[in-house]
Image (cartoon, rainbow, N blue to C red; front, side, top):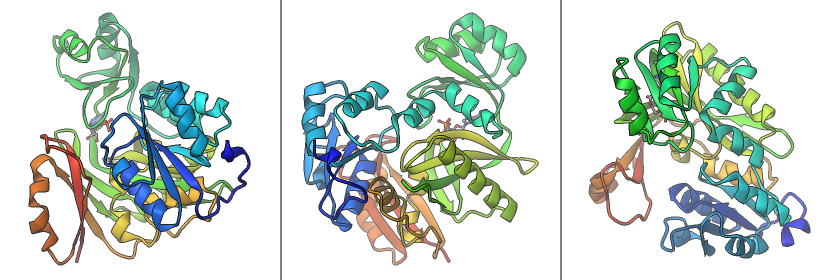
Length: 362
Ligand code: AMP
């Protein structure tokens, strides 16, 4: 495999492999191309948003070792844009000699909501109270210690509000557990937050860390609707968010971009909601707010290049185009202060992320 021979930093013209073929892979690929890299996409969809704009694409499931080996053979470095890649897939690629960033151990921690919260707490980062739920009777016991209302989430594989159910009364418990498919879960106390923010942070192969100003996020029906950045937070909160990002990156020996979703609590404290080990929807504003956006930053990090500047030169409101909102693309394109990103997906189903628009504010 070529990856064993090519030293870091990777030269222009090297091939970056991305596991995952959605819009994040598409935008990573576009940024990589601008810096002169080739991208090989690996994912299950032969007509994916990412494959459409990439030099090479490999179609396969994440446990298809023959297809993974063909993919690894052309890659100088491998990364991922989807956090539900099985860790066994990364272990297999590693066994072939692939260079993988971020490291698979970081993915393992963030795939499991309980391991993630325990990890955060081990660093002194606050979270809501939580309990591990494996059976309906665990849930009955946990609602006594956690209190109600509380939020039941699947331990793994939830996203965009999927795999979550509120438990408001003890009678809701059994129904909520079966609604999530009787799967291993976490019961979380309700966070009485005043706002939700996220911090996008990057760490290079030399340990250099760069953190973007925090963005404020608004969700609708559990799906991110808008991010405004830089957010109106106090200097203390910005500093605290930066320090949380740094602590997590260093503790995971992480290389690449990650997102940390935080609750701003009533008394001003920042509590961790979750960590996404990848570029993130709440970081799309950086495409028009910063000289080096989160996608380019990730490419720089995994290729051993110097990290770029995270200063926000412009305030941006990012709005997701969900479902049929994408049909307004041409109207949005007529707005003088808007920049449009369309993901090249098929049918606009309700709640499906079809694109986003960044609007320059003020
Ligand atoms: P998640 O998938 O964990 O990011 O949750 C999606 C959204 O649900 C968050 O952005 C919050 O708006 C809300 N949420 C998640 N966990 C809690 C919690 N423990 N208490 C209150 N709201 C929550």
